[in-house]
Image (cartoon, rainbow, N blue to C red; front, top):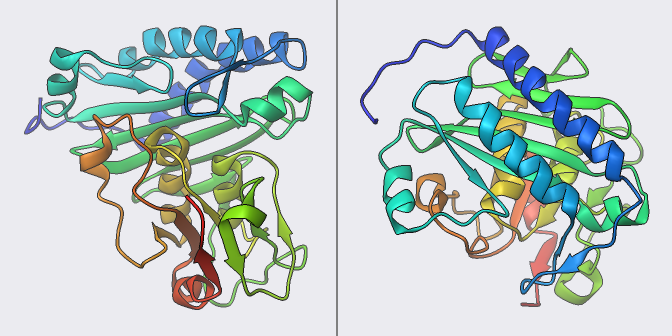
Length: 271
C-alpha cells in the first residue's frame, strides 16, 4: 500500500532481480530463432516465449518485495486489479521480450525488461540480453551499470561509434531528422535507450508503451540522461501504470545537457 516504508538495499535488490531473470534468459534462448510470431492488433509480435517468460516473472518478482504487483505487456489487468495498481507502493513493469521481431528472426539484440516503480515514479531497472550476455541495471540514487561497470554520461562524455541516433525501423515514414551523422535501428526501443545510457549513441527516439521504457528510462536517468516527449514535456509515469495505450507521442532519450539540441533536429511527421 502507498505510505508504507520499505527499506531496500540497492545491491541486494539488483542481485535478486538478476536471480529472478536468470531462468527467463534460459527460456528465451530455448526459443530464440525457433518460433513463429503471432501478430497482435497493435502490429507487434507475440510468441510462446513472451507468454512463458511473463508468467515466470509474474511469479518470481513479487517475492522480492512483499506487497509488490506486476504489470506485464501480455497480461491486461481487470478493473479490480487496475485499481489495486494505483494503491501499491511498488509496481514491477515488465516486457518479457522487447524486440520480438528480431528474436523471431534470430537476431541477438532483443532484451528482457524489468522495471520497478515506487510510489508511481521510476525506481530501478534491469535489461537482460540473453543472446549476448549483456546486462544493464540501475537503482535510483545508487548508480547505473553496464556488465557490472558503472556508467555515467555528461556533456564531456566522448561518444563512440560516430554517435548514431537510434530510431524505429520505420523512421523514414514517421520522422524528419536533420542530423548529419548516422541513424541506426536494432529493433528494440529499450536497447536503443540503453545505448544512450553508456555513451554508445547520441540519442534514441521512439513511440511505444510503458513496459518498453520503464526499465530503460530508470537506467538512463541514473546514468545522467533524460527521456522526455519530443515537445519537451516530461513523461507522467504515474498516469501510465494502469494504461494499455501507447505514450501520447514519441519520446527522445539523450544526455541531459544535449537533450534540447538533439530534439531540435527531429520532427515527428507520422502517426
